[in-house]
Length: 391
Image 1 (cartoon, one colour):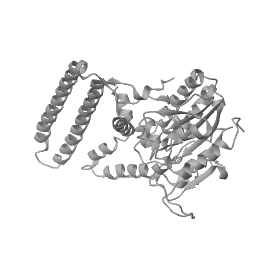
Image 2 (cartoon, rainbow, N blue to C red):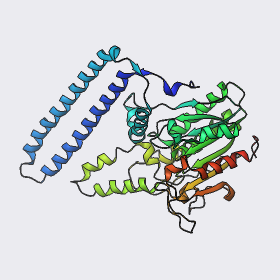
Image 3 (cartoon, one colour):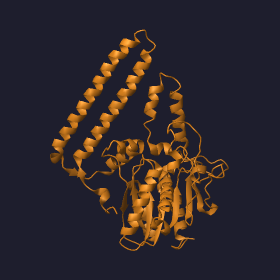
Image 4 (cartoon, helix red, strand yellow):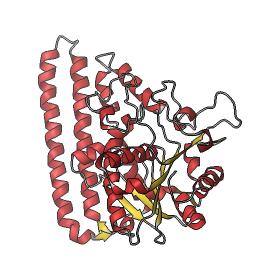
């Protein structure tokens, strides 16, 4: 189990600088490849196409060669400077920037062994209790961002209901199912290493965090993990159970750019989007949802259904920018209300949240669910209404 102060640990300044330098070099190489491809495409219509290609290949090869040399030189210099730079605790701004970077290209960071890739960690805070609430943040966020406008759902639940808050930090650029499996394994270690016998576990997921939580429940069931039997409640805040239109719009933009051979190289930049981001197109939570599929193809929603975890009280809170109730509620700016409530026109994909376990917060945007008094009052009421025993 992760140390209580792990999130504030000191780390070598040079390591972060080397990771940032490596990322910059990788980005320069990728951009050079795109520019070269566009240059060749445009030159293809010219009578001088062949000599232009030969010359440009030498030029771009030179650019890549210089970039590699610069990267190696900077890396070696930072290694030499490491003892002088020492260690430092990353501030909240640095951690937030790192979380955002992981959300966008976290899969690339992990594949390339970049030190900026965020491992999945659990961060307990507060007093130790046999009743634990695990909070799973959203895409491009970290565990510290549960605190918004002076309010933190985890801290408030400890104050009001005696639940010990444990915050998850993870690389949201990886597939949801990958993070779900890793979270399931960490929760097993939490159960085994908790200072007192764990009696009750509650999962609260914000946005993508709700998908990760559902995926973790499935992974625990498949592996027969002990913590799953102690899970009594799952609360999803603004979770895109059936995807987000913004990711689908990104897919259409990719397809439009690829229509022309002149704009096709630019589409490569759009395909920098991480595995985690593309999972949000339809709300992928299982390996089978994405495995064997081309991530950037348009396609249709062909997910196998994953019902809500059995024997667990499941709740959903959605937000809408609409100020009053009505038959056609808008989204919260990112997630449609129907998606957040698990509603789907295909019966086999419709998630069966009981009507009394659903809440819509009006005149609110996506992030407002982290600080909304209405959202917290609902969360508190739901979790305080039941004993520690599952139904």
